[in-house]
Length: 454
Image 1 (cartoon, rainbow, N blue to C red):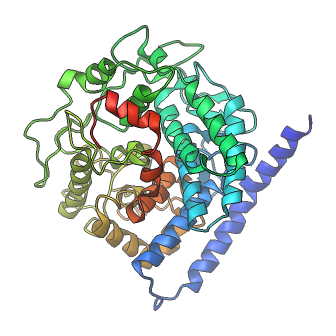
Image 2 (image 1 turned 90 degrees about the vertical axis):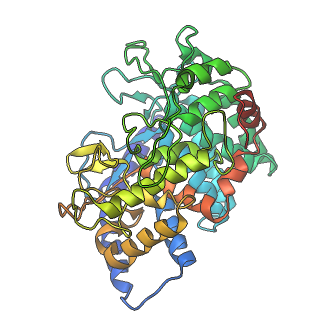
Image 3 (image 1 turned 60 degrees about the vertical axis):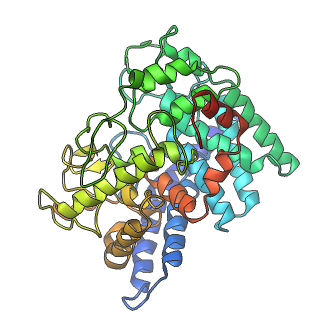
């Protein structure tokens, strides 16, 4: 048994250094086999993109844990020694992507169940702090990996994104075989161990994002809306064991009602909620994705907003901004749009209209918006695949980001950007993940406690 970590390390090194070269070669060969005359229907294109992107969480997963790697660089160059580092939130997205893979026949249900069991076993033994997982963990050991100098412990938002995926898997398995029901019960146990109310920092009416065993509350990041973190408050209110009071949501997330944005309009579309740091236009598009992979926005409403209206208008503002193209960046238009947090020409950036625009397009922005803008998103998908797949599309789907303006095409992936593509395309096509997540009784009780309708 003592040799097991060394075996996994050797296997990981093989995957890291040799598989990308093989995949990159086969990717180029495959792209050469697709002729200019070959045409695909919309459904065929969605199949192609979903299956390739799903592989990030299947073939590309860290082998010991089964979890999603934080990043995967086809060029083999990594900014940190993080080749075995897995991500909590991205793995939550990956769990949901695996459900899609099983239902679409990319893998068998039995294969999916085996992977779920491996991931749950890893999470049961991984570092947790009051039941809250860190942002990053080592895939071989489950030990926390610092995300930043003071962020080496609990990450409540990443834990919420992971829990969203776990609860969706629970609902997928709950009426299955004895083995599937056992995994569902184990998921329920670790869900119940998350002490959401502890992160109110001694009873304040707000949740805090980070806590460290070495630095305490040094990060000092209260979670105020509006951004990607709505699911954190919903799940915190949904906990059957450690729930927050509704006042934490209304005073903390909703800022005592100040989250409401009066008389806002951009490109003819109104936003009902103040988008943090981007009130004049809108925030990065992952804000319309992360919380809504399982949480169904179609009829979701509380005293502050209709979330379908908020998310659809948020997306259309991005679309219209690209068409306007105020900085005259190369390629922007109805076939090339969508801005979100992703790799950028100078590292990593939270791209958004006007406020942060470096001429960089992130495919996940438009492709994960399929439920909100099916026609506009399909234009983007078809344009990229039919005209630029040789530069942009490889074994795990479209690369994370690119720029025609700067002739910049990095061959790199991020878990948090790949996952929403698979999941939100599926929600557009069948509503699968929404239908599963919204059958969880704890979640429905939490929404009711916060006075949501759905």
